[in-house]
Length: 185
Image 1 (tube, rainbow, N blue to C red):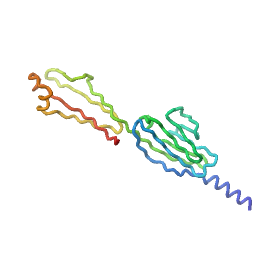
Image 2: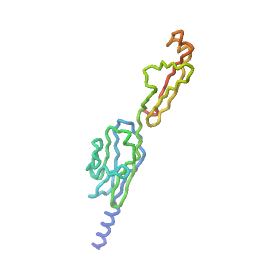
Image 3: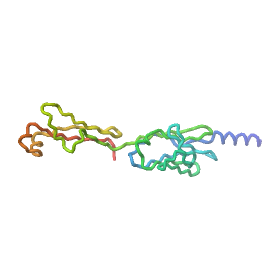
Image 4: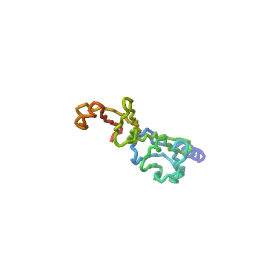
């Protein structure tokens, strides 16, 4: 009878450990703090391993990544990976894993970053004169999600009010560049 109870106890130890937390996709804004919880039922003395894709970050609270923005707090069977001051390079899959039996959950992290805008040529004002040639002014916007760029030509009335010089009335136009991000605040 003792043998049967011991066997049942070993089976429970081997198969009782289970990651209860569910992985999911999380969207976070650049500069925010991100917390990824992982609760393991019947953890016992096993370790919880955190990875970024296949690269080990932590074993329990031991930082293998040497990234000061990351930390793990382990409280019994609870483990929480915290990333301070999230950066675009943090966008990845993060895995919480245990080895006996082998189980893991995956957090897919999406980092939204505000748009950055570059207008070229890089002049404070675009007073370009090239005769009858075309002039190309480019606006490059980067961000996640990708921002939209909207060019609007101001009406002649608006241009005359803002730039009333007679020699420029028929030769110039003013444009408004609007960069819109889908980041919700």
